[in-house]
Length: 319
Image (cartoon, rainbow, N blue to C red):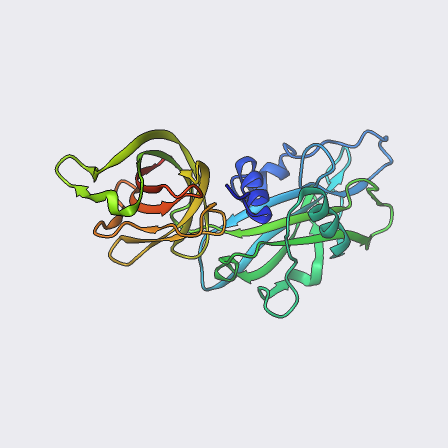
C-alpha cells in the first residue's frame, strides 16, 4: 500500500490530540500556562500554544461558512505571579522560517496564506495582541472565510513576538513563536466504527452480483475477509470525506466519499488509497443516513496481484 500523503498524516496526528480551537477561559484561568519562576520582578511575555515542550503548534478545525469571521490563532501570555496591571500591547510578525523548520522536522507541507491562491485573511489590529489589565492572556486573531480552507492543501499561520510596547517586559527566549494550523472540518468528519466484508474473486467476471436478500456478494468467491475497526476520517471538501478503509491493496487506505443532496454517496479513489482503480460497485447504491450518521458503502478494485475485490463497509459515527 502506498504511504499516506505527508500533509494529511500530519494533520490527522495533530487532530487526534487537538480536537478543536481552545476555549478562551482555559487560558485565562491559567490551565494552559505555567507561572514563570524567575522572581517577582520578572515579567515574561510568551506564546502559550502548548503547555509543555517547545513545539508551539496547534490545529484548529473550523466548520463551513461563507462569511468572514474571527479565528483565534495564538494566545500570548504574561508569565508573572500577578495579573497585568495595565493593558500590554504585543506586536506579532510572520515567522515563515519557523513554519519551514516545523515542516522539515515533521514531514508536513503546511503553507502560510498570503500568496495568490491562498485563503484571504486580515490580521485583527494589524497583529497587535492586547493582554488586558486584570488578565494574563491576549490572542492573535484573523478574519477569514472558513470555506477557503476546504481543499487538499493544508494551511498554518506562524507568528513570533517582535516587541512589547510598554516598558519593563521581557520577551521569552524559548516560547516566542507559535504555529496555528487552520483546517476545514465538514459535518461528516469524525471517527466511525467500521464493519464490513471483503470478497475476493479471481476476476470481475467471477462476480455474479449482489444478493440483496442475504446481503452478500455472489459468484465464484476465492475467499472472504470480514473486519471491524475504528475508521478515522478527514474533510476533503464541504461534502466530501476521506475515509480510512480496510483492505485497500491488502492493508489500510482511504477512499473519497461525497454525500449528494439526496444522501446517496459517490465513491472515488483518493490519493491515499493505495490503488488507482477503486470505484463504485455497479448496480449498488452507496448511501448516508443523516439520522443515524451511518455510511453504507459498496465499492470494488483490483489489487496489485490482480485479485478482484468487492467490498461492503458500514460506518457508524462515534462522535
